[in-house]
Length: 380
Image (tube, rainbow, N blue to C red):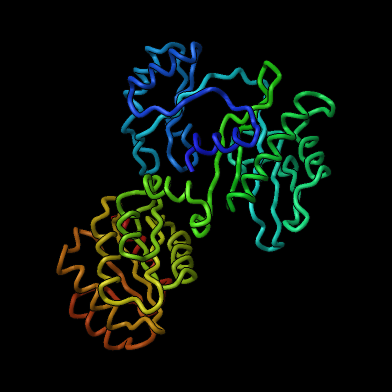
């Protein structure tokens, strides 16, 4: 969900959030800033982390400055996503920042609250630099959130019992848990959760990730996602339409595999040999030549991809169907100057190799050799 949507949900559950509204044009940004009547923060609405480092969060002292900043921010790209919406909120003087989130610990089948008195940075960075500052509180879904859970979390954040801040922080924990359970979310996070200089506990940022499989139970959310299918890249949107699993990354070695495990291990091999995967692309089991063709076309058209590593282990996926799909993609769009390497094993392996050999595509017996060659080609 977008930040403004997540904050609206927390507000619905009783959490005080900074005043603000969504803007779709620079003129709307200026109008909202005038209504707020104090310095404002312009926040790009994209569904990825790291906006601040990418220039997606700016502070403006005047409505005029807000409009000028907005003109530069609209249309900018953050991790491949174009900024089309800005959330304009009142600026908060912050005394200190904290971290608070709920996730699902699938190993224990419980909710897990992560809390840290240090906020404003990635939880991974906190875990790496100051792991002792992360509190983990498990909540059994059958028992639900209890007062002792809340006390454990809020006291760890360094907030004194019996103060207004204690009550405010407690209400944030309760609201986040309600959002987690009632929306069947995978993540509810506030980073930073701040103590302002006026003494209030306020979520300066909020993230909620909802399980797509539960949307049918929430008509309002389902409608919102249908009207705005969130920030996906052009290639991710195309992949959704065709029906294969594709996630865009920031590297330059294109990856195609069949099965999530093989695709992930293929990505690991590319990393191992000093490369950076451009994507995760799983064509699935039993993929037809048409699926393979469309999958390869995505990577052939991608401007950042320099080489492509196709790693197939055929069971119900036939090697000759994969080879036919590769041939069809190259015949339709050409190789666009990209080098392709293939490692293919399993059903109809020899026939598939014969077909690809005629196309002059390098074939490898081991995935390690193929990954190393793909990395080398990407660096040429």
